[in-house]
Image (cartoon, rainbow, N blue to C red):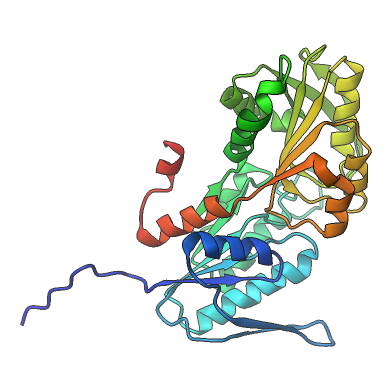
Length: 329
């Protein structure tokens, strides 16, 4: 007896699940793929314990859980882990954690005695919950990829920001220069500068203590009478960015633009950015911004959606095609 199988797929169809951390982004990814979001219930009991129930079977399916782990960080992270385990126990063929913004990315090394490497712990938890693969965007440190034993797609949204600047803002700029907000971001900053064919300058920043505050000191490079694009991977409280804007202004910069991937904007970050003498903010929807924060930043903020990027990577991962080809790699 000869059994001939044509077009044998290892996994069933794509099933998309959106977490409560980034519902709008999950919806946009679903629209890009022309697929529905699968039904699920997420219940929080009075004791703050979470409970997840799927509306239908995922047995044998290729499942993607879209959940960002920004504020409320621990609720979003636990919901992601519980959802992954629920899918695992329902016999999904493959589970991919799609985490646009991965929490604890700054806790990536023991840079002093008696401290944790929490980014490694988060990677272990995602694997222990049952994820077979992961996808994330612009982690704070490259070595986080090495904390996972499962394969993953570590993507960048930098090219989306670059495209937006080149298409909509570049023509009106005067002798533009890219400024890296600190030396730790210098390498990525240089990539921005190369992609936009601009010179680069750096701010040398020295941290004091363990809190989020840092002290910006000197500027390496020339910004006098130039428009400046300050680049970073994420903006949290806005302290470093505020110092960077102050430094370039002191050195004679003209208009200042901010470009960063993850708009965390915790505490009074949105107010702080709103008070700065900046022309425009270019960021993404990797982290949802509340109506209150958007109101503060009004017409000075452009939010580029990462839904097409993640949607295309999900499609390629499902079909077993190269993701690198998307970036000519």
